[in-house]
Length: 323
Image 1 (tube, rainbow, N blue to C red):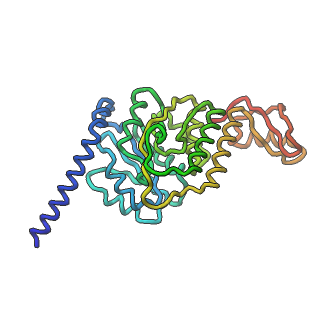
Image 2 (cartoon, helix red, strand yellow):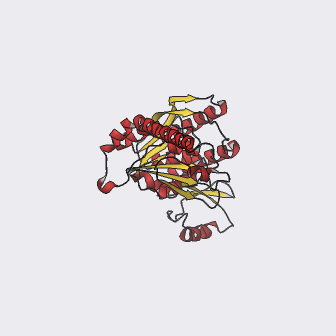
Image 3 (spheres, rainbow, N blue to C red):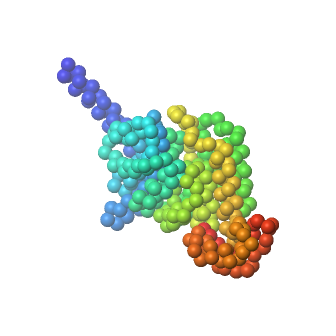
């Protein structure tokens, strides 16, 4: 009986070693490439951030297939999962060091990403989904333009690469509409603008400090903020697979409203226009007082250059944009 148990354990160990070697061989080009950018004092070169919410069926496999090493850190941000996702992380094979950060309440996709960013030490940061739709073997394609100085911020694109599932018509139409709006108003064309597989240089991090959308509209907000700050963006080909377990947490109606709200808000900021609501007949005095007191409007300079839209709303053209 003991001989059988020993044989079974050896078989499992051999399988794990075989899988580990297979992963290492698949990432051989990746490891060869990042070796040339080895920082001094063994500092972290690459931070891989995975926001997670109820992904017990996929998170373990995703983590086990990620590259590992002294130059790489993996951060999982648990957005208050209610299933066994955290238990599955503890089952991850090998010696991967995984940093798990837990939210005490569900805050949303964008908030989880920002939490990961605030705790990352890498020179380059990568964000990817924990539902198994993104291939870790595409990480090299995402970080290479950044480390080669071709881009500051990269976005994975299934349209430049490939996808292995039937794409809903509503999803494609929505992305086309957002693509055209961003192109018209901000001069940047991004086809797969809602993809969560992204990478960016550490110098881009300041754009995440004053984000306004904690949900999935955060993806569009990133593109706009990066564009307004003058960073170089590049869309890179990736593979996207079908989601085999669970369901998307996206509420289409809410996302649509937030997306249009996001674009409108940043368009007004780009045009240096802020809209205020008249509180009473003494709008000028109240406006002046609000500007001095409020941190939100602290960038504004009090002026009488105000155009009344109607008896309720008026606009003021600021001398400084908000980013």
